[in-house]
Image (cartoon, rainbow, N blue to C red; front, top):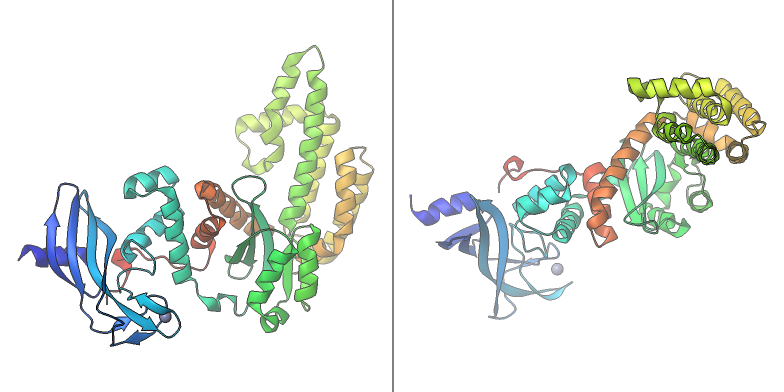
Length: 415
Ligand SMILES: [Zn+2]
């Protein structure tokens, strides 16, 4: 077999003829020509047989590595006039518009981005992290099905912080499909309004339930746009609020202990943080022993802990609507008389959102499931911290938790 035929087979790119291959020390350079005569607009489906002029534009793409060498694919492209986009350089079948990488290369990087950390990917694929971000954006733009917003019945709205405290992404979860179906930078009413604009009035009217946190911004937009939907408070957020109240009480008790001459008591107590915040069924043997010590010590922190666990139990899924309502009311009244300031405050908030919390229980908006997806989203946004643009961070979230099926090069059907 001739070297060029061999290289062409190994390059395995759609719709090209390989004219010449140079194997250099670090790189394989392939000069190729497009097999097809017609010219495709690189930005839409427009196709023509006539060129705009005789000018040719030299372009290069990086393909999948061959052995330890990088692959560079080089060709000259013609120009055409698209009725929508004006004079443009023709698109190629083996790469996405605006990309300097082959589709295969991008699919591989996008897959890796959902599975591995920054250092692994940038070292393995020899690209910088922002390039990975831009690749994620293109793969998402290419693979996101617009029909994913059809037939939504029960959705959740959530915000995650990205990068530092003041960067947020608003994400919409399809509770039925357990996927993130929409996202945008920002976290106010206007951000959620954007989602409803994309959804359109007809599909919005068919929403039956919309769950969210207790902030006013989302509630306002949901009230205006989803007229038939029951507004629910995600149990996840309610539990989170109560857990934070416990943490406030724990810190206060610890600071009081630190003032005492016996410093050992304070030290033991500091290690107690995770013991108190974790679910008791997830504790190690040592942690369970610490929990027992805290119980024997009693006092405000132990009372706060039992209140947190009692609150969590309301959402365990074994109470009917009436029982949940009774349990929630009882919890609020015990908490407001607890003489724990953080719990008195949180009981007031919970009471204010009572109907929304009970609606979530009634409609079966499952806490554990939401929490699982939530934890995954948080893991992914942490990985996206190094990106410079929020659209790249959003793209990584959609790739990992959205309705996109990623295919590796060997899994994709060839043209
Ligand atoms: Zn066009």
